[in-house]
Length: 280
Ligand code: PLP
Image 1: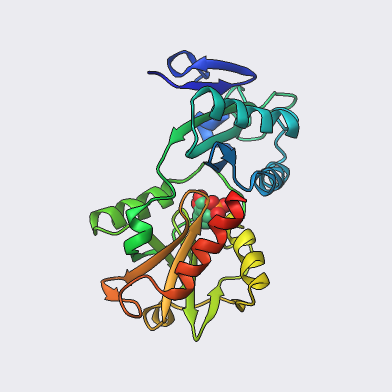
Image 2: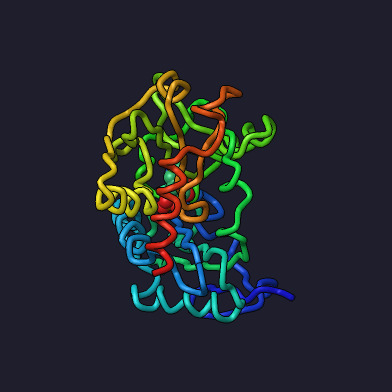
């Protein structure tokens, strides 16, 4: 059965949703996106996703395609129409259809597209067993704080990880881990969680934001500072976060076992804390 997707105010069977070849998303990757998890049929952390979208649009001087309330309605309606009780809603805004010219066109409506994916997020064997990551060079642009749809460097990193039998690539720049190709990176040392501070070098993860708040409430110390790959190899634990993986324990980096080589107690407990809060 075909999905119902959303395009510029209309709900359509996926095969009927058509975008012009002149849309700047297609020609220049001139667009931004968000991925929101759905658990128990409800959106997780939707408000901070909207806030980050607002920021991405502002930084690129791109027009809102609809109101924030309408955007929430689109997400809820797509989950409902596609019977998604567990999965994700993907949405993107592109600058719209214009004659090909590098400079931004004037008075062009932006394009809103959104679709759902059914995914088993909660009972993940990855979460139970932990995942492997490899390091890859960070070859991205310098405005990684904007959630741009231009993801080729991350696709290359993820492909390298897949070919190495790993779940994720941790991108490294000047010896320091920036983040995963589609996730935020953390290590644990002596019970303290260490993650890179926000800057233009990384995406401000929505899951990161919630997790830091929840961890602090539980009196887990979170140190926001850069860490090296060497430090990660020697860490007691490592884990990653993203909207669709929540908190995912890491058991090996570049083939070296981290800690006991099993999901660590801090990552395991933070996953539970995050999921309890998301479902409450
Ligand atoms: N960092 C990058 C580069 C990402 O692409 C993502 C998610 O796609 C994240 C971090 C995690 O962000 P979030 O927790 O908002 O999903």
